[in-house]
Length: 316
Image (cartoon, rainbow, N blue to C red; front, side):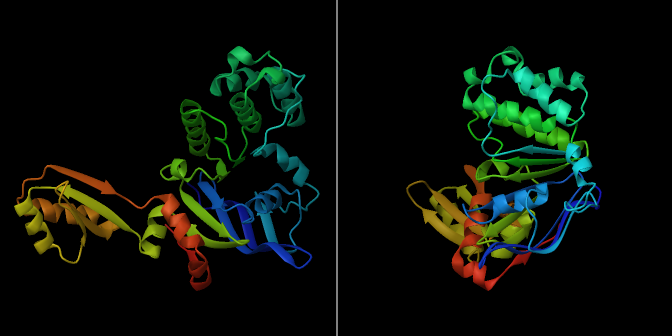
């Protein structure tokens, strides 16, 4: 992945009257990177997306998309290199799926030969010539993704991309995102589906009350906020006592009914802890490891006291 940012925001603010929709945002997203933008409703995510798309102008700060300002006269020429899937996909219901993609391919001056492969990628070949009025919500969402992929965009912006999709279709969406990212495009996802994002993104940007309160890879943010991995070990009673005696600093919980001992450690230390457990020579019946989820990270950073105490911008 190159370090050249395709999306760069320097001290960006957007103010409506006395209200700041977003305030003092510094963010750079590189080529071939997948970044998730997460936050509660009203946190400023939609405003930030509109700024990146050039639909609104910032009150303060500098914004660069592929090295150009959205306010520059030439920016309209760059729009063909940006694919966008909005949260609410709205198409003319009396048009067919094929007519929709043909229309958008003309807007982007894209080759019409892309259309059929796009239907295949989103599994809509059988419905390509059906009217949109017959499409389910999930089908419209997949057509919206196909629309966003027209022209092989260098930047792909997805707002709630898996909304209304079944598990198989969600997996298809993330497979496509991986393909696009691996081809060198920048992928910018806004989503509330935090459990889906955990292992599928390079970094996460957490917004709260219009401000960026955390930025980094999930593991680094877990460490920064002090969330622990929980190692649950099922052993007999004697070995349970032995575990607790050897690792008093890591002891978290004991469930005598299930014969389990829970140890808490930093995410980066769990492999070392497991090695030390094995060296005790006890009879292990089962081991489970629960890492802090992205949802836990998000909740921790968006608690009011955490927001006022710290702002974490981590690298790596």
